[in-house]
Length: 200
Image 1: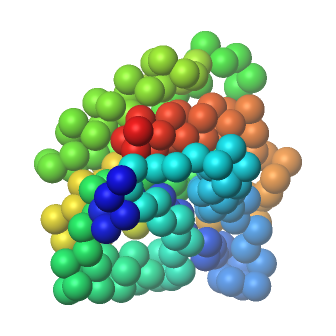
Image 2: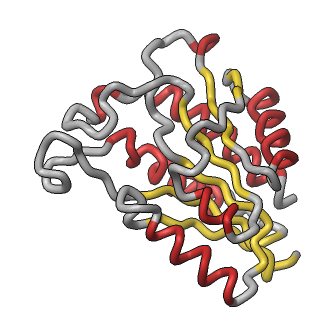
């Protein structure tokens, strides 16, 4: 057991819309209640099953991601200044959108960074072993979510996102009815497997 080493699971909880009253009409079901829900569900299940991790696991909901990754910037900067030993950071952002119900098509994008290729490969392995998910590695949006700031401060981070474009993104139609919770469950399952495998 090494409680001074941390695994961070995180997702941003703020949301906004492009064409309405920015914050007051922003349901944000996929972006990013989906990520926060996965973070909370993994915490709930670990508590329920009395999982005893080798390292400390910290569950974090980040603020102000939509305003410039401000919450994760603050968190990662403080962690770096206190030399917090973070083994890995797993970020969830928009993980409940898939337009079809056929599980053989469900695809997860695992975004990684120069220092987290091995973690990305482990995540791919967990998807293959425990889920129906196909995985890809498209790093186009590498700097558009909270994992990026952890990378900037030298920590290993990866970023899980649906590989399907969501046309309700930043609109008032980003509602629960447009989410695919069976798909989201598979992403959460893969994430749980990765965290458990990293803390045995």
